[in-house]
Length: 320
Ligand SMILES: Nc1nc2c(ncn2[C@@H]2O[C@H](COP(=O)(O)OP(=O)(O)OP(=O)(O)O)[C@@H](O)[C@H]2O)c(=O)[nH]1
Ligand SMILES: [Mg+2]
Image: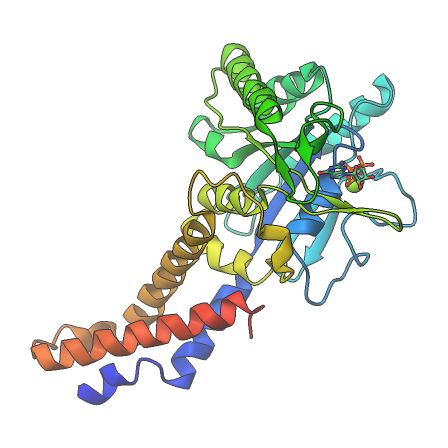
C-alpha cells in the first residue's frame, strides 16, 4: 500500500495527467466591431505551440477577417468573428455566422463555445451595436445559467480620452482616465442589465500595440486573464495555462485592486487538482478504501502535493 501511495508521482500517472490536460479543448468565440482589437487581445494573452492556422490570430493574407475563422492553438481554439459595423448586408451575414458558431456542439452534445468574449473600444462614443448584438444574437443562443460564459472587455483603455491622461511609460491610466473608464464600465453594465436582464462585469484593459515607431505595453492583462479563467469550467483552466504568453512584460501593469497573478495561479492549481482527483480515483480508487494508516495517508498526501507542484510548473512553462 505504501508503495502505491508514494508512487503518486510515478511517471505513468503524470503522463496520463498531461495527456488528459492536453486533450481538453477550449473554444473561445471573439466578437465585436471592426478594429476594436480582438486579434491584438488574443495575441497579447496567448501564444500557440504547433499553430495550424496563420502564425497569429487575425494575420491572414486578407487583413479583414471575413469569416468566423477557427485558430487552433493546439487545444485552445479561438473563433475569430468578423468585425461588425461595416455595412448592413455584411452584418447580416456575419450575425448568421456567429449564430452558427454559437450553436455548434462538442462530441458530448454540450455547447462547443466555452467563452464568448465581446470586445469593445474604449475610445468609441457609442456601444449600441454591441448591446444589439448581445440582445439579438448572443442571448437567444445562450442558456439562462450560461450567462457566465459571456465576458465583456473594454479595450484600448489608453485611448478613452483621446490618449490624454495616459502614462505611457508606466502603462497606467491617470485619475481622470480611471474615472472615465469606471464610468464606461458602469454604463455598459447598466445598459446590458436594462436591455437583457444579464448581470455582467465588464473589464477595461489595453491589449497594447507594437509597430516600427512605437510600442505600448498592455494594461490589466493579468486581470483579464483571471476573469477569463474564472469564467471557464474548472477542468479547462489548466489547459489554457499552457498557452499563456511567456512575455512577462505583457502582464506587469494592472490596476492593483487584487493580486491577479495569485488569482491566476490559484485557479490553475485547483484545476490541476481536479485532474489529479480524477486520474487517482481511476488508478487507485479501489486500493484507497483500505488505507487507514495515518503514516501512509501522510506520505501519500505529501507525494501528491509534490506531484501537483511539478505539474503546475510544467503547465505554466508551456506544457510538456
Ligand atoms: N492604442 C491602442 N491600440 C490598440 C490596442 N489594441 C489594439 N490596438 C490597435 O488597434 C488596431 C486594430 O487591432 P486589431 O487587433 O487588428 O483589431 P480587430 O478587432 O482584430 O480588427 P478586425 O479583425 O479587422 O475586426 C491595430 O492597429 C492595433 O494595433 C490598445 O490597447 N491600444
Ligand atoms: Mg482581427
